[in-house]
Length: 273
Image (cartoon, rainbow, N blue to C red; front, side):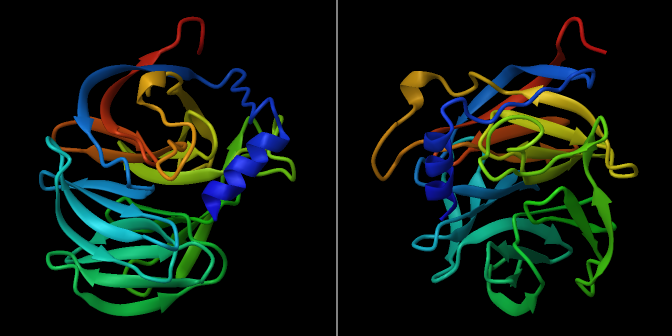
């Protein structure tokens, strides 16, 4: 499972993943508001719609999709996904689409009721979904983001993601630069794709036209040590989960088994372009 892979990788590489943004603009954050988040939720997909958060959680034992009250963290609607490792989710018209990790099958639900409607199939891993309202963008843990037609779910193109000419990719030992960087949960924000970088506290901002990384967001320290659990079934995992309220211009981030979800504003680091 992804949690086990992450733990083994970090154990094998004491330095952890290293990211050098170089001359790419860098940002930090200002916390605007803090909301409660279910510590049991192994967050894989997240988006905001009509006053609610929609969340897809992972792990084969307990994946589900859920509708959540932002202000209280209360789960008002949920559907379990037994025998699959749930991944990214997205809303398209009156449907909710969900990817799974390594089983090459996705699921389509009624957005209002979560009633299952049908399955779809794809090649490779499924990590994350986002949309610009016209196309679907699909992340599979490689330096490429696939572009799908939202009605046929057929691939129509790919975006090669690079930072200063180097692909955002993964390496055998998950350590060092430029390796050890996997695109994870994604969100469409003001014409850009924001993506978590797995096993780090970084988010990249991607120009979808060129694939170039146009900014790094450093979320280090967002979750304070007293909110973390280091061992056991509820062990706090990595930063993962980005949602954007376009009408209110609010950006939300959280992590796997984090007890909090944060509304943040970006602050450009001094001395960067």
